[in-house]
Image 1 (spheres, rainbow, N blue to C red):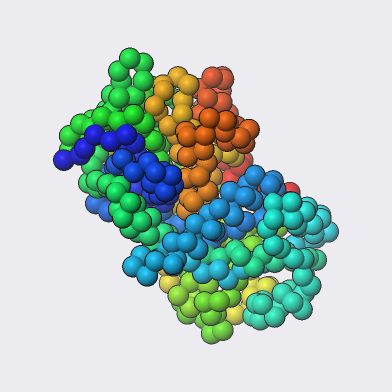
Image 2 (tube, rainbow, N blue to C red):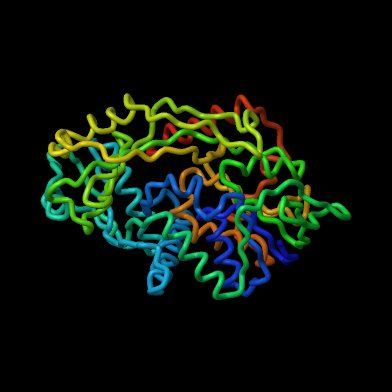
Length: 405
């Protein structure tokens, strides 16, 4: 049985739970989160690699990431449900002068945002990552407060705090209809009953498009395939080694369970039209693409020769969603008051969940939200003309140029 609530959130992944936490912390505890799976964090969140990096190309995006890190730190203090946050720092490695210049620009943006970073030399980088060969590097940007977490633990930490604040959760609950009254959202019908609400928040991940369609809104939320692999235990890989990113090779990595987690961004992506599957269904199952995964390993071997003899233990794969302009879709629709978006996360759903929650609270509760928050509103798509062919191509491009200069 579900209950009437001021806020109803659809989607129990990191974004939905992060939004619930932010609202509850803001005093909005009359909220109910709906999840169709038997437990929280089972779909897109469970597929995440768990890295959290703060250096970005704008002060607004850096501050958003900084808020997420502050949230993970705060959650980590509770001994009963930790996000498994490891603040090990990160290295961003440039292999050319143009990338070195990019790192200098990132450092300037970080300075303006109040984020501690440092440009370090090869010897300092080797001290922090002894197994890595930095001979080809032209510059390295070090951020000591970056880190990684376990996605499933992040969700459970949010849930634990939300329940303590009075929020409610209903799993194994499928949304069937969005109810309207006098031109605004009035509630939701599910297979477990009907509940009224003032605000309905769409945080449904790969099904965010379908939930928006139930409300009569067409939004370009495009699932794009992403993969990574984890090796068996490798000598010398301790849990305190920093995360790393090599933008020119489109690679990222971190230690996981004594092995190396290595992922990357494909130059020619595989993406879906969300209209090709139903709300009651699921995106297609992903078979491991060994050509892509082996390509990641081959690119990294000159920097980490030990990787050549390491066997693969497991593979992570999923359909994170991207938008044509690479920005989140956050805020209330002008076409349907009470319908609120928290989607199109462009592979920042887990790491950005704390900041996304903050942005959503600002969009709803602040009478004068910032220009940045206003720029994320779903109206930018519902009040303009676009085609699915163009939207898919542009969203795929956002993925393919994720580490673009």
